[in-house]
Every structure is written in C-alpha cells, then in structure tokens.
Image (cartoon, rainbow, N blue to C red; front, side, top):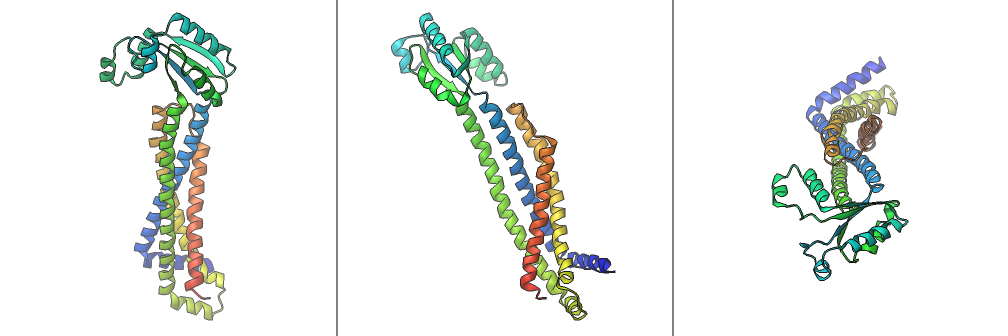
Length: 302
C-alpha cells in the first residue's frame, strides 16, 4: 500500500507540473549531453596527444635556387658537402633515432599525394618548388628543440619544421572545444538545479493539504519527502537517458570523423563510452535529487 501511495503521489506531482517537468528534463538532457561530449573529447584528445607526442619528427628543408629566405640567398643552395655534413652530424646525435634524405623528385611526389584533394594547389606548384629535405625521427621526442636549434642556421639549411608546432595548434582547437562544452554544461546544470527546485517547490505547495494530513496521521519526515525526491530522481534519470543518445552520436558522428581526418591509431573503447554515459546519468540523478532535497528543507517544514 505504501509503495502504491508513493507512486501515485509521484504521478500526481509530475502531471500537475507537466510543463515544468518537461523543461527540467530538457535542460538536464542538454546539460548532460554537453558534459558527456566534453568528457569524450577530453579522453580522445588526451589519447591522440599521447600517440603523436611519441611520434614527433623534424623536417629540415634545404636551400635551393628558388629559396626566398635571406639565409639561402646569402649562402646559395645546399651543396653535396652541406648535405653529407648535416646527415653525418644528425646521425651522431643521441636524440636522433633515424635520418631519411628526400630528394626534390620524391618531395614533389609526396606533396602531390598529400594534397591530392586540392587540385588547384597541386597545379600551381611545379617540380622543384618543393625543396629536398631531411626527415628526422627522434629517439626522445621531448628533445626536439635541441635538435632543431643545432641545425637551424647551418649552411644549406633553409628552415626547420617540427610536428609539435602543428600538433599544438590542432590540440588547442580541441581543448577550446572541450572547455566550451564543459562551461556551457555547468551553466545548464545550474539552470537545471534551479528549475528542479522550483518544480518541486510548486509540487509541494500544490499538495500541502495531503502533506498536512500525512503529518496528522504520524507519517515520518522521510516518507513525506520521498515522493518529491523520487520525482527529481526520475527527471534526472530521463534526462540522463536522453543525453546518452546525444553522447553516443558525438562518438560516432564527431570523434570518428576526427579519426578519419587526423589518423592517430587511437580510438575510444566501448568501455570508455559506457563510463561517460554512466557518469552522466548518475550526475543527472544526483543533481536533481540533491536539488529536490535542498528545496524541501526550505519549503516543506516537516
């Protein structure tokens, strides 16, 4: 009988404040979806950063006849002696794992393959515009600056490019996306807490007569509060379930696309996805339950 009474009270409360209940569920779902998306992006970016940090390489571009830099104009194009000396010094460095020389023909072919989807750029570039270069794989990626500084101003060297500068700009973009999603989620969660508190307050006010009767017959404080707490928990649970769909969509329609655009060999496991979904649902239930409890302490004196 008690269980049936509690369930009937929950149904009455949800039905009487249907508009507010829908607003609460919607706000909770949006905020949890943003929270879960931020968590997924954080995990994906962390995994990708770890993968690429271990694979940072340096490309040393050599001077050619058409190099526009002041250093190349003053010293002329790289000679065979410059190339041999640079290669020997690189191989002797303990920070370097391997050195590969790429001549202009191979560099031009690699450029065409990399930018095959940008035909206008390929057509505007001629063979010889891409300088020959050395591709240096590091034994310790954290020591890239030492290698870069040691070859920066050598004769025959036009410029030195390292993957870390490109990766840092790329990951800054996703870090910004992650923090933007989390900040908006926090704001939405605060709004959800206020909405659920207001909904529970209205529900308690509309049922003040039933509450008074329950007090007279000796019902315990917990028994009187239970229907209201469960109302909040149900709103949080429904919002969390709806948010789960958006989180799954984020995984398959955003993060998987990132994998296609920026291959890292690392993708989130199903376990990581389920853990984010579980955390989001639990957060939704706890948020609404706690907001309901705090509201009841203020507006429902028992």
